[in-house]
Image 1 (tube, rainbow over the protein chains, first blue to last red):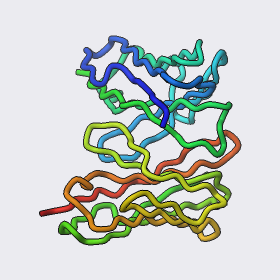
Image 2 (image 1 turned 90 degrees about the vertical axis):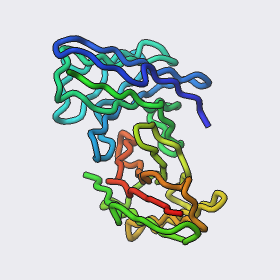
Image 3 (image 1 turned 45 degrees about the vertical axis):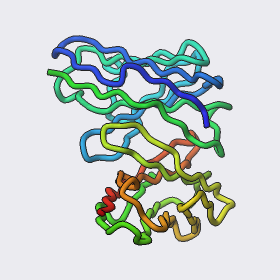
Image 4 (image 1 turned 135 degrees about the horizontal axis):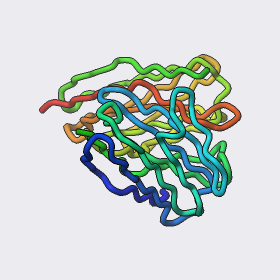
Length: 118
Length: 112
C-alpha cells in the first residue's frame, strides 16, 4: 500500500493559538487530498477536499477561514487550525489520492493527529 | 446524500468464534467499498477493498461481501483472536467528487 506520513501525531496547544498539521505522500504523487476529523466515539467526517495547486473545497459547516489547507505540491499538504478553541479538539487525519479523485482506487490514510486545545 | 450505518455498534465475543459485521448504505451508486480497522487513538488500517463490480474479497481470516443493489456489505471474521479487538469501519466511495462516506463503526472486543 501507499506510504503516508502525518505529523505531529499528538499536539496540545493553548486556546487562541494556531496549529499546523502536515501530511506527506512518500511514494506517490497526491493530486487530491482529503482531510477528515473524528470526534470521540464518532466516525470520520470529511472536512475538505483539495487538489494540488487549487483552493480547497470545504464541506458544509466547516469554516474555511479557520481550517486553512495548503496543497502546493504533489507530496505535501498542510492543515492549519487557526485560533484553536477547545471545541476544535479532535482527531484529524489526511487521505492523499492519485489520479484526481481516483474513483476506483483504494484509500490510504495518515496516522492521524490528536489535537487537544486547553 | 450517502449515509452509511453499521450494526452492531459494539460486539463482544469469546476467542475462536466466527463473527459478522454489517454495513448498509443508502445510495447504491458506489464506486467501491472499503473496510478499515482502527485501534484506539490510532489511524486507519485498510483491510479489504471491494470494487462495485465485485461480490466479495478475501484476505486471510477476513472475508467481505458486497450486495450493491441492496446496499449492504458484511465483514466475516473467522476464528477471532484477542488481537482482532478494534473498531471496524466501512466506507463507501460515491458521488461526483468520489468522496468516502464512513459508517458509524463497530467496536469489537474478543475475550480470552
